[in-house]
Image (cartoon, rainbow, N blue to C red; front, side):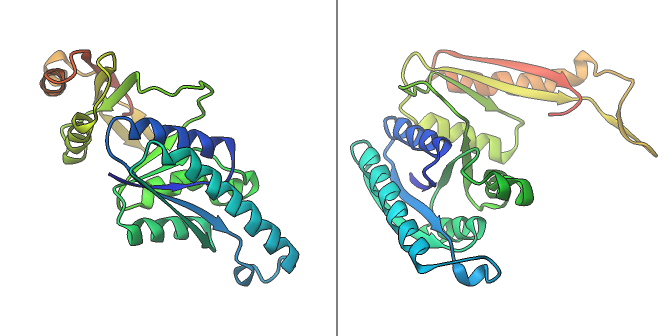
Length: 237
């Protein structure tokens, strides 16, 4: 598996590094570490000096070298790249150029101002990327372990591929997997917008969804015995 790992020196980016390390313990991983730098030409109205750029380059190289050092022991290969320009297009372009299978990144980086104006970088990448994306939430445990995994399943091709990917991982025997499906209550559209239907789902309507989840869980359980399933009825998936 080839992974693109965007970093920025933040704590959440380091959580993503830890996640990649944990993933590399269950299957072979090649990593491309990317850090995007400021491009003065794209921000002509902003103050800029060559000294700032020099300091930024030193900082970026320090973060990239540190990240590579942390990943080298667990990953098959680690390459580092310094990009430049707008963060989101740079990450998406690098993912395509490197032909990665997965992008792993922290949920929130250093720039709270940019987040408030542009929306979450991770949300944008997850929506627009051609490959799968894992957004890593903060985890303050020192030793990250894939102890519990939730597999969202809806019989779609994408959810079946997610299950197939999971079966490729050399997970610990004590890893617990939950296959979760959602039976969505139909909605009624009115002049005021969308409201929940007053008619709840019947057991007969939920049964096919539950049966499909059970079949998938049984398939996974052939390889990972600690697998269970649940089907939830809800207004929204």
